[in-house]
Length: 313
Image (cartoon, rainbow, N blue to C red; front, top):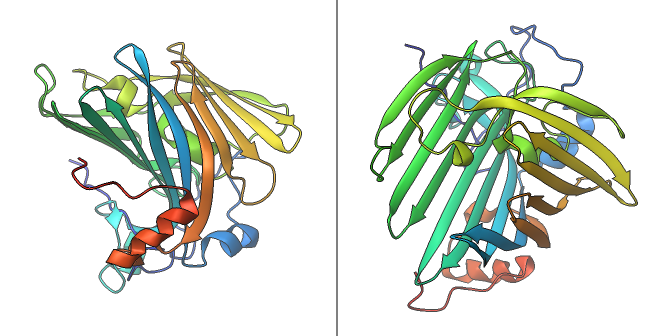
């Protein structure tokens, strides 16, 4: 049984900065992102980027208004567990650098609300037989008044490990391991990182490329048997001050990201063919993990978000 890997944190309180790139892995790919000095000038400063979005989410046959928050931050992972590596705890040989996306989407459905969270971790250096820029871990969870769902996928060498837990009948607790179609694969759950040039494959303006893709953990849900591998046809086109990135998935769905050309390439809008649409409200770089005291709520103003009123779930 392959060991679980770990997630390190560069920017969370007490977390070490990303470990330097190791020469042990020789895996390369021509479309791997360049994590160069310019990249680290933005992402090794000890801050995370928080972006708030006005969200329209289709659920139960109707569009639901809500809020999304995306957090982008560089971290250090422990490869033996694929969790945050606390400084001084792990052997440096066990550590590697990742770019993390936390995407939280909240919306109301009638009397009760939905709270969805996606975590995607893309390796910033070759690791486990995969090139830099490929996802090393993705996790998705849903909390709503009916019950909880949780699913995690780990990208091991030549294989994908999945574990899921669900309240719902027919889903329950499941685990499996299966071969991956290639060393360089795309995770749909890492598309926001891909659109910002942080994940494989990097496209030139006007380029189209078809790649093997693991469809999102949410779309796959907790079906028994193998996960949903498919293909994604990726395109990039220039439109004024924006680049438009599209991913057409082999199950018929389409994801679109409108991204600023200027560094740090913020996503000003993301949408999906099912009717999902999220428009940027504000973004701010901050050490949000330090803003957990009562007066930390003032930072919500920078994100154009409101404090939840009393007696709100």
